[in-house]
Amino acid sequence: MNSPDFLSVAGEAAREAGAVLLQYLAKNVDVEYKGAFNIVTAADRAVEKIVVDKIRTHFPSHSIVAEEGSGIDNGSEYVWHIDPLDGTTNFAHSNPTFCCSIGLEKNNQGVVGVVFDPNRDEFFAAEAGSGAYLNNKRIKVSPVDKLENGLFATGFPPTNRLDNPNVHYFHHFSVLTHGCRRTGSAAIDICSVAAGRLEGFWEIGLRSWDVSGGSVILQEAGGRVTDMEGGNYDSGDRYFLSSNGHVHDEMIEFFKRIRSGDVELSIPAL
Image (cartoon, rainbow, N blue to C red; front, side, top):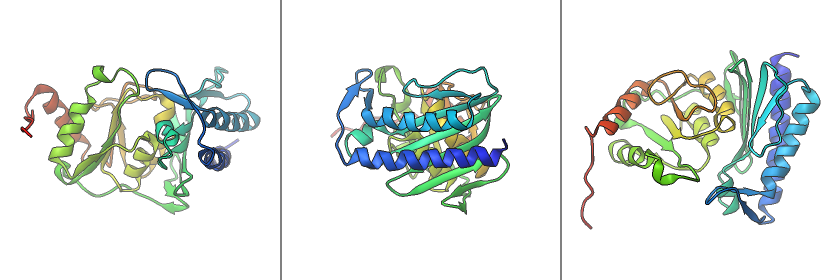
């Protein structure tokens, strides 16, 4: 099968997933805990089954990596990365910022990406070499080329937060740029960079299902994905950086300056 078949199946799965997520949202489902603050709901599991079953039906030889553990390793060069509900904490609090994210990689290279935000009915999709689209309209990254003029986003892990330095980066970006947002959905943030709504997004400790789909969409929209030092990024690496490309090197340099203490900001008295 060729890539249009991949994209079609991924799109159908994401839309079905989104419809079910909205049904569960209306029910105020119970929350379970995978860690101190790392939660899961019945919606995560139900939607993951829908997506995984569809992928297995159409591409039974492919491997699947899925957040809630229903994937399969077939030793295939094709690997699907599925986040049935990216933004589970938002979902559990009835905050309408969440999505279903699906990415397909061949030999660790992005082939197809789909991210569906059912609350806004925003369907982001891309396949390698064919551009990125939002609801069938071509999208591209913003032209902003100075860090100080950019709007950024990041996220924080559900566990081991005191061991994560990202709050320091967040603080500096918030003060020295147009601002820094924290939406709670990495996939939506990456797509926001692709659509020109943000200039950059980074996070520490993401997993492959968080970024695989969005990364294809962003790069097809003209953006750039690396680790936080500018090196190659493979899905599941600890340090993820994405941008419109124009401010990417400046972001990397800014991270270095923050780590070295060159731009340490004092905390004013109340």
